[in-house]
Length: 87
Image (cartoon, rainbow, N blue to C red):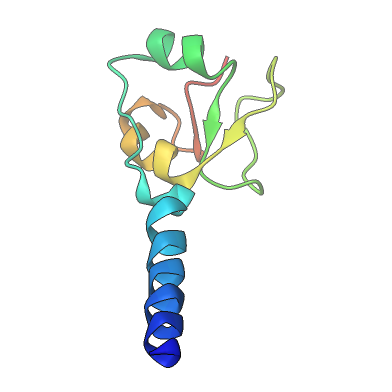
C-alpha cells in the first residue's frame, strides 16, 4: 500500500512539473504585418543570431535576438543581413 502511494505521488510530481513548466521555445513566434507593428513591441530590430552584423552600419537600438521571431518575420529583412526591421 505504501509503495503504491509513493509510486502515484512520484508519477504525479513528474507529470505535474512537465505540464506546468513548458519550454519557452514551444510558443509560436508572432508574425507582424509590418515593421511599425514589430517595432512597437520590440524597440529596434530582430536578429536571427547574436553574431550577425548589420550591412547598413550602426543602428539606434540593440537588436532582440530570436531565431523564431526572425523566421516568422523574415520577409521584413530587406537587405538579407539576418536582421529584420532595422532602423
